[in-house]
Length: 423
Image (spheres, helix red, strand yellow):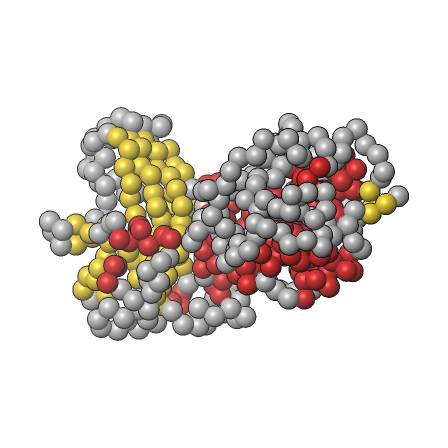
């Protein structure tokens, strides 16, 4: 038996210094050069060590500190010409070998390919579970990198999570960051630099460290998982589910035997005080308002959160009805409703948000279903900032809407207050 790289203890010691890049985006991959695999396709030529020399192409690189740590630990090295090629894409095989070596997992001395011993070691350790279909020399997308990293780094992780839940767990734990504000890029490529930084984060988490997470990348990953970012953005109220996770599978309703379909595309929480919130586009690009004695435009509202259902309406045949109640998500907490309203546009309780009808200077309360086509609709709530306290449940229901009085309300989430979070 032998081990790739230096023993795990030595590798972990190098992670005592958390690199500044941990809290930053994981590099711009738009200028990444495609790699033909001639150095690393079926051989191990790219691991020829340049240890003891200065890597000539990492000075000033966003991942420079992590690369130096990894080379010092011995689980990766430069090329014979003294370069590291940080922006070169890595394959599934390359990343798996680096991760196994960094963890100090024992590998057998032989295999049908140069990477098979590492795959076998990852399988034995529960990091790989026959997840990948096709060629191991395929360039590794970020979602696959995260799959292995989360299993390697997070204890108690459930291996039956789907790929998007896995992205969420990885982002929440700080193992992956966004490639840009609010961009998780699950199908984006993985470069050597990105791979090293993620592996260094895995080692840090296994060494008991808590990493800073990228809030908006985590929120985007959560939307990919179950069409909402409510756990990430409003954890005080919605991160302690009582009867299961947010149930996005019921957020669609067929009207009059399929003549029309109303469905929620996503249910997003937006920080009204952060102009860089990635979902602020829904407020900037739509005329939305809420009522507190008089109407207030949502784009002018501060010190609160907007919680919006982005809805798709597909009317295939005219319903011959000018008043379609659009499907929506209802938010309930009795204590919020009992909080007294204040004058002006300050938010002290939950208030309904809707699309503004400039002709009649009021909200639209229904949709004209005499026309056919595909349409967007937005509705929701504004909530105040501050640590609201309630012993009553915070509930989310999907209201089906429709043209009659038989609309049903289907539970999506029941949660209780989690006081360790501040809003």
